[in-house]
Image (cartoon, rainbow, N blue to C red; front, side, top):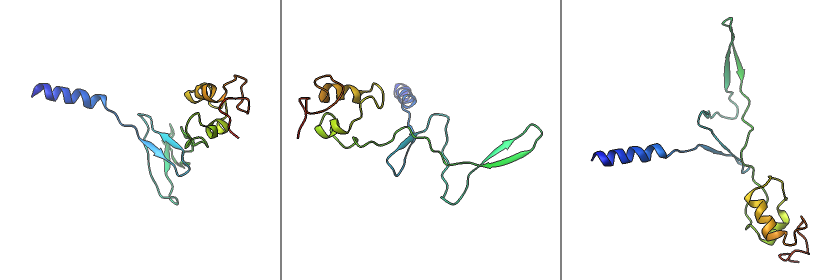
Length: 124
């Protein structure tokens, strides 16, 4: 019984969940370990308390969080390496990523830095 309890404690400490906020426009934001989320209605305000050294207290309205860590792109619903994906993907827009490497491998077959009729996957 002790082994089972120790094993379950080990697995439960290894499992962690992340809170992800999904916005209507398809973008997302992932909360880090020390962040909290507060949900309010569109017409209500959330206030931050600011306490000064002379004991004065001010409440300042918090602006809605605008940071996103994922924004949807036109290539999201396309198969990587397909003709449509190759035409829509913007090379080097994200830096060196798996998508960029896939674009170089499947789309830019002649290595000239662009996807056009000179590449082997081009369709009319």
